Image 1: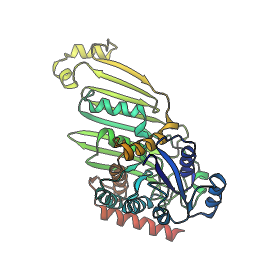
Image 2 (image 1 turned 45 degrees about the vertical axis):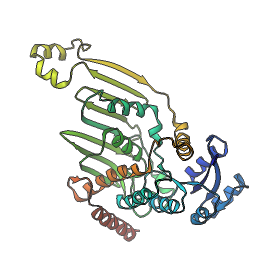
Image 3 (image 1 turned 135 degrees about the horizontal axis):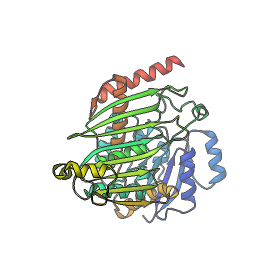
Image 4 (image 1 turned 60 degrees about the vertical axis):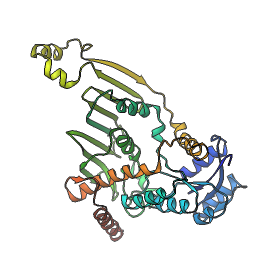
Length: 383
């Protein structure tokens, strides 16, 4: 195989974007081979743009056509695990859009099946993992440059969405078709990055508002507290009703701090001595002089790195990595099996708010599904 023949399942906004850059030849080791969508209007659109390309209304027919070596799923969240399993069953490589699913039980089933097909490539579209800024942050943390993590905070409220955004599609911001609000639509990338860099929390407590500032059934305001064990804590705040918005990620360890502003600038402050060593040895006079505006150079060094946005290259970079893994065995940036982590965190935030108590991870998957189904049934009744 010289090039991976990719089929796109779902020819909506995201699928159309992928088709465009694939058709332009931006992925050297991959070519656009087929399209699939259940909407007749999409079939007409595809016929105009890509008249020579096979189009399928049933994704299973595409999988069995012999036209594709791999697929990417740009479909409603609930369908990702099912389609991933069906592709892998037929020895077709699978790249899933985020999130990997709506609830961790279905994603676990996907992961277990994928594990039975070790020769196939299974990946997820966590394009932010290709961002050099977050790769640098992870490298600093993994290298121990800020020591043991004590606290991590992310405020990501730059997801402003007006009511018209929710009104444009009946499935949007619903329990039954989308599976949630900001936690499953806008914020999965930050949830993934936070667990990728900091690890998974052991306990979660949340305060979540449903239909707080928008006429929707799902969440538009989230405040979550994480317990990582050994005293380390974290917080995650997100919403869709702040038109000004904030994007600030802070990580504090016993040897320093990292501050990320607007996903563009990283400030690294490395302590000359660990916080514990400072506490054990500094006199109160030295502390007084420091807090009164004394020289901080003896306490920490500061490095500031500015990054240019690489947004236009992030999705193509995941595709390039996916193709290179299939053809050359290049290590995956976002293995599909890791998609369950972000889904589990989002599920724990929802479940904590529904039960009004702290929950431990791994969560009770049956209880989560039971509570989710209650939301779906209530939504049907109200509509």
